[in-house]
Length: 146
Image (cartoon, rainbow, N blue to C red; front, side, top):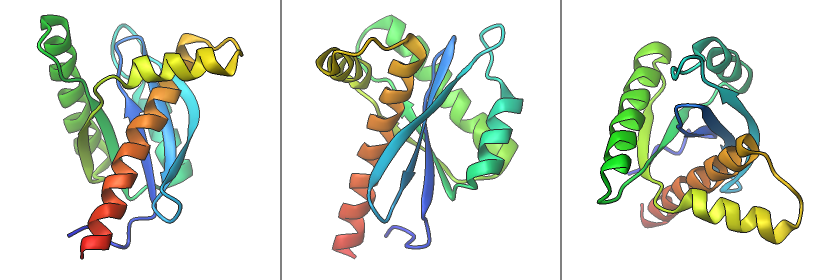
């Protein structure tokens, strides 16, 4: 059963160069993109993430988990899982993984349809919105079943 006290969630689309970020609300089950964070030497910028979490004070963190049969995706699956564990260990905020299958492709499709040029970091944050909203819809569904 979901915890009805959750209000704000931060979603992450983990990448070794950029980490896309979105903030969502359980009341509306909607998310919006925040600025992506550039990684340093293929490692998360923990200081920037800390500032972001201090500003938004989320009750839950959501990390997209790439899943596929391809070996490259397996590498990123392991990296995203590790990032999720590190988030929880550093910030002591409940962190969940959610299947992000095809969110980056969907983000590119949305960007093309908008006819407005988007940078890689904007695409990553749009992917984070899709990841976050997927979790929010599941959360709302579980609340309805409770």
